[in-house]
Length: 207
Ligand SMILES: *Cc1c(COP(=O)(O)O)cnc(C)c1O
Image 1: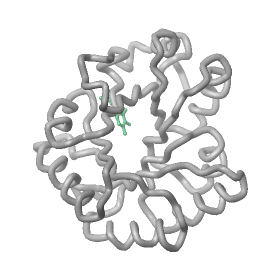
Image 2: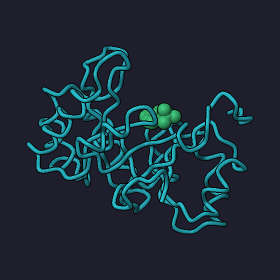
Image 3: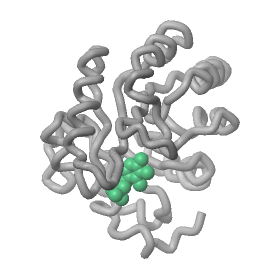
Image 4: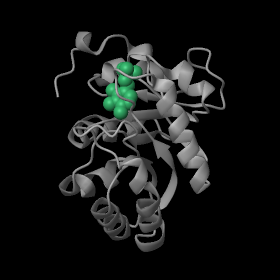
């Protein structure tokens, strides 16, 4: 059990910018759930780590460009950042080609920040219908990254409400600084980097 978090919660160890040597102790302790935010970096590190540690579940938690989808489907198990119809189409086509089925979360831009990925809350239902009914994807939950300068609880509450409206059970919300609040709002998946590994800028990893 990591950080005294209820064992029913999915703790995603965010291993971006961490070397395999930094990731190894967690794998050796039995942890199998990890997140990366860049396709190329995941490709560099995880195929060999997986050979030594079967059962790893790797989540894509960063913005996904359509030209990286083939590689993403190859290296990841779950995509948390589905946020547009074109990406749903590309993911579905690539999963069919590789004969792999990855579960997806839709990323919602709860703060409606122009620079941030994620679909707008008002566009969520249409995207959800498209992704499940047209593209045939297995959408299992919602994910968000609240604006850094706002009360995170409002965003976690909104995400929970949106998921409830669609009957979706999984909520990926909460990072090192705010995961305890996210858990109070019903997070099923928390994404923890610095809380598990320490400050990222001390890592020797250079992508
Ligand atoms: C880096 C990252 C995290 C983890 O951040 P910490 O503050 O180090 O816990 C969580 N989610 C996403 C999408 C990230 O990019």
